[in-house]
Image 1: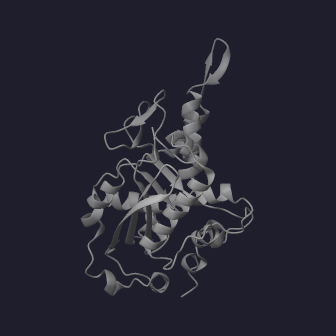
Image 2: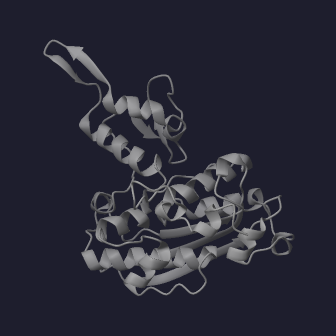
Image 3: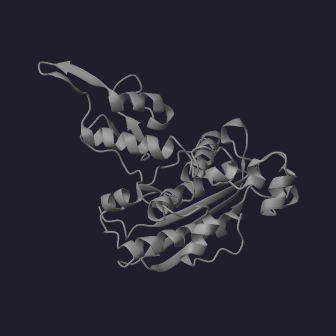
Length: 292
């Protein structure tokens, strides 16, 4: 499959905090649809920018960072009112985000609450991973630092649409600089990204485009709900006439390894001995509850 004719959806969220699984909610969504030519140059752009009423107070430290206050979202729609519109943008796309697992987790939780299926994109590109791969000696892989490195403007950091646009243009510049081939698999391999599971194994795609198990105790369920079973599948072996052999084909096991690395980590650790917020490409003013 060719990918350069597909919509490139760069996205970002602003949220009430860092934990989507403990009640934090989205307060702003920014989607930037880019179209690029064969050389990787951007030839078209369309934005979807929405404030979201989270149904809870916005902490002062979040307002200080984003400029978004309770008054700003008081008349804004809730996420369920926007869910279908947002989901439609991702259909058949190449999705790009900076620290993809973070925003993906918030979207997944919000879509679940709304009862709306979010179709997984054809490719999920994390520009943090790309930055680490392309600039291994860089001291920081935050979006602002990556944008400066590539001369991409970012005037209103911590606003969803501006961050999404910077992320998308960084992606486009890196694609053009490295001459990434138009084959989707070449893009996935270059970016270390997730695509659809291989067709010759026990994983597949449901009617919504989501990766699911095709066999076993979780048959028909999304793979993201059972990462431990995925980890087991990657190592599972069976004993035959010639000794032990892997139960699943290498193509499936390689896809699982990449999925666990990208979706199972949600990080961009730069110092393995430190657990400071900045070592996870999260601004300390967000992560440190002692700041006001």
